[in-house]
Each structure stands twice: as structure tokens, then as C-alpha cells.
Amino acid sequence: LGTTQLPGDFGKFNTTYTIGKSEPINVTVKSAEYTILPFVAGNNVYVPRADQKILLLHFTVHNPLPREQAVYWGSLR
Image 1: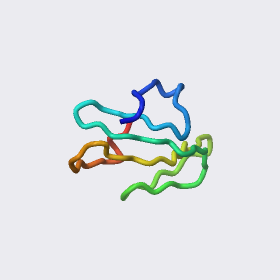
Image 2: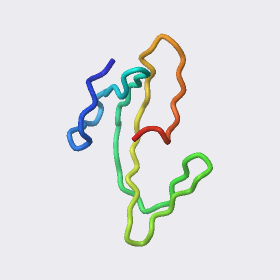
Image 3: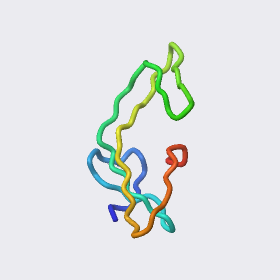
Image 4: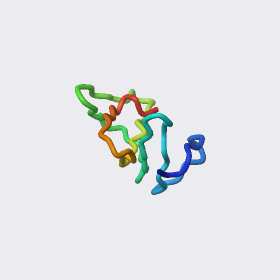
């Protein structure tokens, strides 16, 4: 398991954090960028308004448990 979850403003790139207790997952944020281009996630297309930007996070998710568990992108908050 990685380090314990921290407030968002203290997170670091390329550091593995464990999120959750009963069904933990390890998350490592590789990079982040702002974009004004449309972003597709599943069946949804997110298009920022003229005064907005999208924060795009590139990350990996790892299952630290010895059994299979599902991860849904919408549940990561």
C-alpha cells in the first residue's frame, strides 16, 4: 500500500497514494495539464466554455488487494 491520502494541495507527482480503507486502491498521478480542447470520458464529451479550462490528470491505478476489484473513473474524487 502507498502513503495515506492527503489533502489535494499537498499531493506530489509520481508518489503513490492509497485511497479508501475497506477496498483500497493505489493512485499515482504522473502529470497534470490544463487544456481548452474537448475531452472524451466514456460516452461523455466535456467541452470547456470560452472562459474555462479542463484540468487533465494522467494517472495510474493499482489494486493492492489479492482479489479482483472494479474501479469506475467517476468514483475517483
